[in-house]
Image 1 (cartoon, helix red, strand yellow):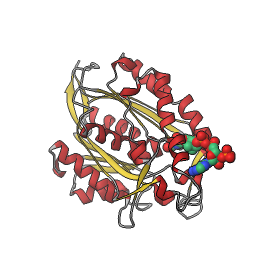
Image 2 (cartoon, rainbow, N blue to C red):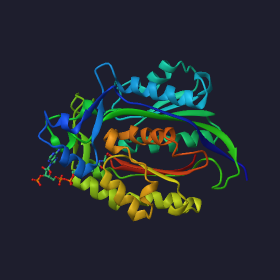
Image 3 (cartoon, rainbow, N blue to C red):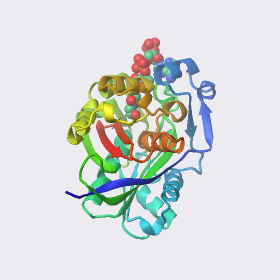
Image 4 (tube, helix red, strand yellow):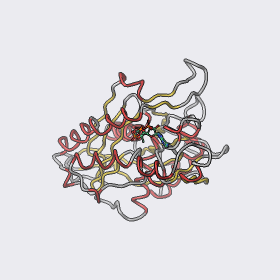
Length: 325
Ligand code: UT7
């Protein structure tokens, strides 16, 4: 039976101009290149300048994705921006990206699921496209986490970076089998009981300030490796596929040790794992589309490849989506 599929027709990304190495960070923070590399795999990150905001980074990434797809503003009728660091409390960053790109039709909204935001965004866009509610969607992950970091807290500030990535999804008819191109399935979860393990200690409705990121790193680590694989198993089961069928595993880029432990647990070969955490640090909702774009541009991900994306973020929120590219 034919089925509308959300097919990836373009991707793009954009990073701030300023690259900061671990050695440079160690000049102002009590840390070392050795510690950061050993515990996380991070070697450098990009940090936004004052005139680089979540919407400007997101706009550049979205424009690159449109160019890659050979499409223009007139072709897009849905913009979803996954972010936890919007330029303003409102209007949404998505509407600012929409305006900057000259898109005047359809709907645009932000989606807040922290580091899982891009997976949530892909899953949400897929619901619009596969039901015929929209024809082409831009799904953007854009963040300036440097603005919510406590630069006195070495346990968090060395981990994150800024950036943006985007994909264009287009509704196309498929056969309804796992051989179709497009988003084949997605699985989302959340459990708000874990709030205290990863949160920002401010907000418009509480302190009236932006606040700073707080994290119980070890507990997040344990949950990420121990529990998050459920959504990946769901995706395999829903599509009758296995780890052996995957061409690429593109997880949220928080920590090399988490990524490799998860891949090992799932039986996903290490050479199928796309790693960019060394170059980008943890860019929250931007990390997966940044990694997807890197692997597309260097020729690893090709049309027809089976790609699993997966992430966990504050809340906790977590999810996975299986995409035939
Ligand atoms: O994207 C959202 C999801 N977030 C994550 O997935 C992050 C998950 N957590 C992690 O990636 C890891 O837990 C961290 C990288 C945050 C920490 O690694 P760890 O192996 O769990 O280290 P730890 O927290 O147990 O700290 C070990 C030591 C401590 O010193 P003592 O108490 O053993 O003397 C820390 O004070 O390392 C110390 N330390 C540092 N040393 C140098 C903590 N941060 C630093 C630092 N530089 N930046």
